[in-house]
Image (tube, rainbow, N blue to C red):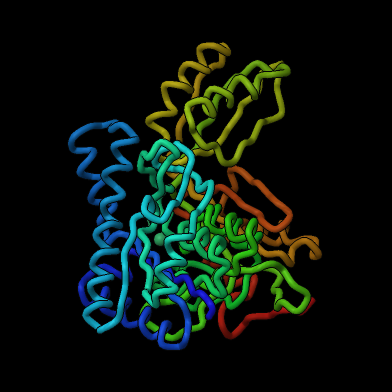
Length: 412
Ligand code: ASP
Ligand code: MG
């Protein structure tokens, strides 16, 4: 009998009726002859509410205690879902991450899964039970509870699928799957039926919120095919997998955007070897993730360095940056929070020159100034003024003909 892992996000278990809906889906999957493992997130906005509560007590709560608090959200949903399945006359058993041996490192609030001990899960599946596992949480070797970073239940599901050698890993959410752009900005965005791990990684890293970045990495590293689907429809969703020969491959698979970053520019930095390291090492030491970096051509021995970072990290980064400015004898720094990143992603651009130029043309025609550019073999990202982001996304989506009717694809 094959094992199916199904993960349901917070919006899929936001209230009692939705929890009952999840119970019905799990039971139906079991009735088809599968062993079923269900991973659930906390109900609705529970995690946000818990974060808010913690911040009412302390500006900077200890991260270990934060994990202790946040992991309670998922403990509520697993118990309620098990009850809902029992109410349908089927057997289910709920577990915390600790109980099923999801071993992580000790970086609290963003822990990485090191190992999964699937023995207990297999025992219960063999008894014919539906096994329900709390997403987003694990335990260190010292038995301290950890969480896996926001959206981490996706990673729990993929890690369980890998460890159980599941036939399927389905990630259920409140949208039909991965779209060619955010449908709230581009109403005729189309559903992407298949996408490579590499493209999905770029999409997740540039603002697509449907899957946690780390879950895609875990899937790629362990060969878990991920199917993103909707909890409320029968849509087949999006399949994330290795690139293969027969795969339908448009040049551009999607347009993403991200307004959650700010830009810092350090002015008048002396231009000599080792300076970039002096700027970025202290930021790394403070655990601040820097995204794009641009260093300008130097003028009379001085240069400007700009970089982007998460808006949430700015309060923690500013003292470090002030220190860097002082230490290097730089002229000063400037912080701009009104920026956004717009990106186009597509494995097809590897074999199609000129895609970057096309993107820049589209932005120019819409009088949108580009502040920074970064590329990978399958991505071009531009930082622009935040006020232009919707225009940019729509114009790029239209130019690359990504809407339902216009979709043009080629097979390798
Ligand atoms: N409940 C956690 C969060 O809101 C984990 C998840 O939903 O995947 O981030
Ligand atoms: Mg999620």
